[in-house]
Length: 333
Image (cartoon, rainbow, N blue to C red; front, side, top):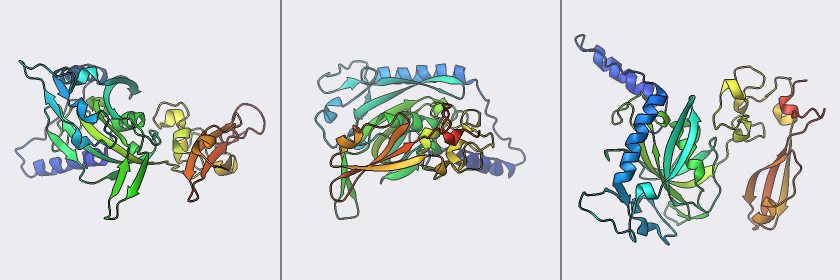
């Protein structure tokens, strides 16, 4: 896989370094670390240029209740070509523009939403089961899946945790009996991300440094993460809501462990799990769970369909014993 970050990049660089060392007359190429803001301007111009000169077969997705990325065809507009607006669309006329801040830099990226999906939407901190294909702007395919794979979104290049939560999982799925799963009404789309939300200055065997990336993807299932097992889903432990876990913003007790991985968030010697209240409610419909009246400090974190057709909702209540406005699990006093 080539959408994993960190370890793969280090391995590729290490292998390249070792092979170069075999020849003392060969020097290791040096990659200049560019300013992120300046590179974003360059990348955005390249992406917009691609979007303005390429079109896709939009008619293949109109009324399609079971779309797949294999249905998508993107072609470059020929100089003498008139696009049939009934069947096709310029990408620039169909995409949504998203803005995020990452590594102290403001980024724009683009998504083509081919199908929203009828299930739940993952958060940036969850696991997702997906199919995907990765391309460069010159149409070089650098990675793809033959069968669905499961990833923790935070283990991938940043663009994934920014783009995928805009989609939903399958409305339903069924085992067809031959070892495969048939997913119905799942999220399908394309993300166009700058290098700053990809590999940036790092390179792999098929991805040059500072390459904007295109990922086609299908969002099939999601699995909510609670990395430290304290009863609070990981996404709720992103205290400032920026979609990232950092020691500067998300480490309440300053022990160099972000809250999402810390079983005692405030460092008071009492486990976080013992400073919150987890409850379950059973209702006959999912809508009934979603529309329950909850306390102001109570959050619905999960809904599960039971074998009898009813639904169980799980909530977490952030108690504040001393009434100072700080939940007990974040209050060491």
